[in-house]
Length: 509
Image (cartoon, rainbow, N blue to C red):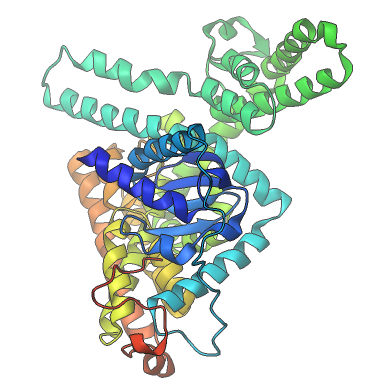
């Protein structure tokens, strides 16, 4: 039955994105089905967002459909299978959709329905996308593409590591502990190789050559090599060294492809790529990347141990704006470096407080607008995903288009971040053993030096503070009188608005 449900979801999505002939590639991350399209004008956005399983859509370099954690991993293979079947049968693509939703005219006032807010959210996303199309931010996006495919393994190994730690502390199943340690640590011991492989693939090189150069970093024999007057250590430089080594390998490979005769290319190009990049990695990049990695770990520890509350307030309060600017992608290698060094990233639980503030703000909007059934229905449909850390529907469908509730959501995130940061400063330091999940989904990945009980209690307390502060700030300061007068109304379905009636599926943003 679950497979039938997932296949039905995939089958419902396919015609709404222009059919199989409009699709050039399919992938997924933690929460989103990512589709590369030939012609985006064939997408029927409003019908797509009205599907029960769809939590929202994000238009970026790929068309991204938010399905939520777990669901997306099950729907994606069904979607790929449907696309392959349709192409095999040479079925004509529904290129001319008869009922493409018209673009709504710009309203001179605040919208009063969920669909109008969703349209405003879409416009804000488009504007953000245009602003984010700078070379630096596009580079950050490509760096994020290197690490996103690694997240499922990080999560799986992180949860197993947490289970192993619990068994060790309780003294249960001692014969199983070494096996779980091997399972949880194997991936992390070779993560540099995966980073090198993905880096070369993302930047146009041969993936296996990127992986081969990055593998030098974790090879035990590097301990016999002197660089800058000291012996190298296996793993020195970590993922940052692997990233730099693979980027260099891509450039060397491209240089060789242009200059080496075709008859010799298969022999000379791979050899020179690995040799040149490998020597530079051993006698330069490993030392430099190792110094940077050490500085990142030292700085994060110092920041939270000396100014934990203030640091948490700033990080928790600014994370949503960082997401809007696309700068949050720069944190992914930092998270991975911290996990590699200490077993967990201390930053992620603090940044997760931004989602708690967002949830609290959305609940306040729900209670402040008792007559707006359309908006309240959207909030009810998006809140479960929000509690699990999927914030796009609430951000782009509710708080950001409304304006002030987005600011008050950041206030909630700042309060929750300050709470978690304060306890870090008091000695209850902890973090997440993987990146990706947040909200309630982060509980199984928590680890810290103060014990699981204290760790879970502080994180839960931070979420509670974020919820309550986001709610209070939004309830009392999130609306002007004019906003309440315009928004707190019951849209008339007969007036031609795109709002859903009581019997229709809500339109999540």
